[in-house]
Length: 112
Length: 116
Image (cartoon, rainbow over all chains, first blue to last red; front, side, top):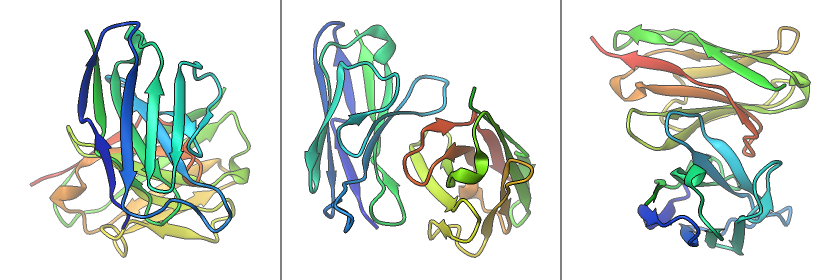
């Protein structure tokens, strides 16, 4: 199984400041179809997870453009350009290239 | 409006069975893969299973293979997860989600507790 490793595991950010989360996979996530199935999900406190980013860098419908994803192969990054209070929660990366799909451990983002 | 509503969770003894349901509305159910994702209390997310649009393909995480079976009824816009031989480590919130790996919509979850 692919191991997804996120760093850091927790982050405390001042509103308006940037934030960055790293996600590394134990194998390349480049699929034979040429796409890279790396996702970012956010689980806000008391809520179900929600999709932020798909295929490394595409923002899901309604996701603010302060969220951006980048990377390739085994190294990926989620960036928030200017953190807002509503961005608090646990962020998970997930790979969808090699079954079984696996999630990272999660990064808890706290807003100061 | 897209809605996914899980039901069927509860308290069950080790070795017991439960059947979870996920009723969907607001989209053409038969056009999408569907998935189950679980979250143990205070822990992270774990993909459990998925099923193709017509039910012809199903995949499971190793830890539930042979014990859990996912199915769907496209006429009833419903997804199911039959869970047998339940173990304490299966205790979790179970979410249904639309998609194969791109989980665009999630239900609110149903809690399964396996305990004697």
